[in-house]
Image 1 (cartoon, rainbow, N blue to C red):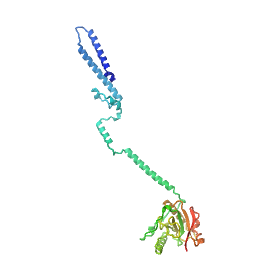
Image 2 (cartoon, rainbow, N blue to C red):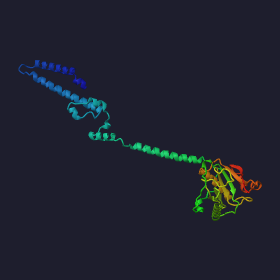
Image 3 (cartoon, one colour):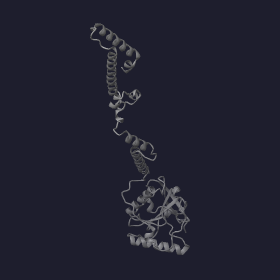
Image 4 (cartoon, rainbow, N blue to C red):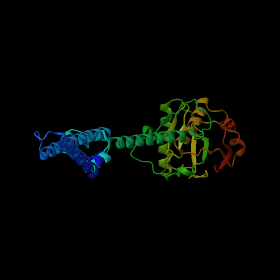
Amino acid sequence: MLIVLNSRFFASFIERRLQTLVESFTDEQDAQLIVPVPFLERAGAKCFTLMLSTARTVAASSSSRLHSPVAWSRKSVQEGYYDLEAGETERTPLLYVRDNGRYRAKSLHRANDPNRVHPVALGLMVALLVFLLIGVVIGVYLLLLTVQRPWPVSHPFFLVERPAWWQYPVALEAATLDRLAVTNVIVLHTDSEDCLDQERCVRYLQNTERSCWAARRDHIPYNFLIGGDGVTYEARGWKSQHGFVDLPGRNTTLVVGMIGNFTDRQPAEVQYAELKAFITESIRRLSLSPQYHLHGAVNATRPSRDGTIALYSQLERWPHWKGFVARDLP
């Protein structure tokens, strides 16, 4: 519309029409009532200017409403100015604010701050970290579930650690056990009196420790001892080699002693149950391979007697039983 109104063709067409109108008007008037031609020309020019301004105002108003409120203002139209380029490109009313200077300052401040972390990005990073930790916990739990247990254990595991029964300044000094290679468990009896309560069992361990230290300057040779009270007592523990020179595999074996003499009679059921709990606990602590081998010890000089002691009559029916190992005893 503006292009048509601003064209020379349209302007010349209007001038010709006005000229024709003036000529016809002068011919029809009386000779006594003459209207000056310059006055009509000025009147026509004023009409033409008023019509052109009105047309431009209407066109600009229609175009701004259809396209962009940013590109048009009432003041610019009154001054005869309209930004056609802005009207074609800026068509997003959501960007309009009253204070354009304040909006630009905020935008520049946000764009020029490189250390600013967006809250959404920060939330996503925290969520990712939480999911990662949950995945690690679930993975460890599933790994523990895959550890094979020799049997379901109903008897709880009771452990009395070495510092609880040996409070003397002589510390344990023994070769370190290769925990990754522990695949054997040797069970034997102490060939001594029974202990049916913790006081007697602790006294037995203390006396054995003293006698071993006085005889050969060495500590008690067992890794663990199980008393008649159904409690496991730590001697050398899971981290040290046993002290029996006549038993094989010192670096791959745990030696467990059943306190008492069980040549002609079996131990109490609570001692068997505690032995099962001890094996399960050793596997849980990764101190014993799930594919372990269970052995008994016999005297090589008297196999007919030690090979048939009552202690092993039940152990021979347990899983992982692999027979006897010989001891060189007088």
